[in-house]
Length: 116
Image 1 (cartoon, rainbow, N blue to C red):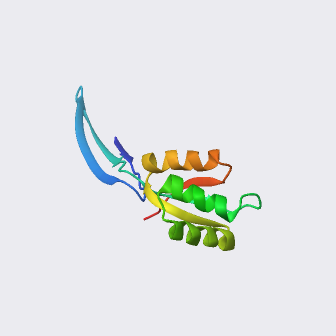
Image 2 (image 1 turned 90 degrees about the vertical axis):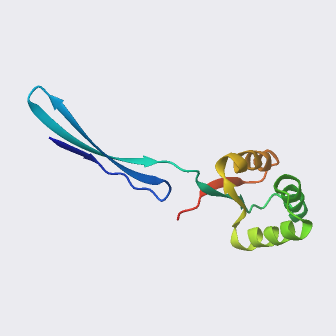
């Protein structure tokens, strides 16, 4: 009996494992493909709304994301014109506290995985 598990993702390291097991006089060959998850690379998306001012978004990006005033202003302009913008990239554990802090200030923000 041959069992095969196939997994594929944009993120991770693909390993193939083959084992032979003997039960009584019957041999079973089992092949397993294992996907080992690596750190996913993500973006912190800030969303446009009709509530928050440019100044508030700029101040938030400076305070929370460490942007310069110029960077934050450029991000705010893009957010306003495109509806959203990836203001920061990194791993999930780094971006999650930033996302939470931005949403606590009343600004819409999400984290999205970057597809490779």
